[in-house]
Amino acid sequence: MNLPNALTVFRILALPFCAWALFQEDGKDPTWQLIAWTMFFIVGMTDVFDGRIARKRNQISNFGIILDPIADKAFIATALIGLSILGKMPWWITVLILIREIGVTVLRFAVIKREVISANRGGKIKSLLQNFSVGFYILPLPEYLYLPRDILLGVAIVLTLWTGYEYFRSALKRT
Image 1 (cartoon, helix red, strand yellow):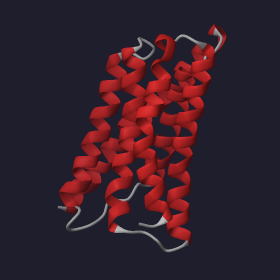
Image 2 (cartoon, helix red, strand yellow):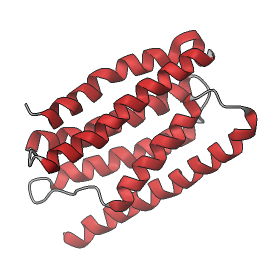
Image 3 (tube, one colour):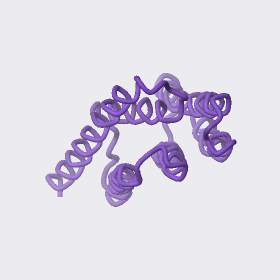
Image 4 (cartoon, rainbow, N blue to C red):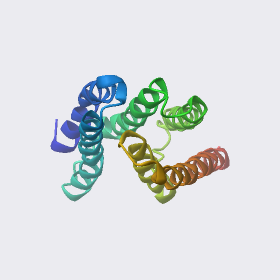
């Protein structure tokens, strides 16, 4: 167990506490919304740090290669499903994003014996946009910020679909 893998495990173990904070006071109390957002933010930052540390210290491991994408999907799934249950995120968005995320993860595992499909630049930007846009649904924003928040989520959805298409297209070319 190295530091990057410990951060990934922490990310997974912290998600129930993030969800718990999200659901406090039915997700309507601004203080709990800020607490939930802060918790999700801290957990999300561990994803940034675990990858950088693993590359810098040459601590990339098979465990991390497998667990990191699972942790990423669990992270976004926890936020999306929680927000949809609370009525803050339309279910169709949650389902659309999770189908793409699960599909790419299954694709990665299907070819893992032949090769590792690493996240490309588009996938990393997609994750960043997803995380930021979903974070804006957790925060207690004034109504005049709803449209920019929704536009950002729209861009994240388009990039989510595009990068999913690119992953599958690339995998099909290799077979």
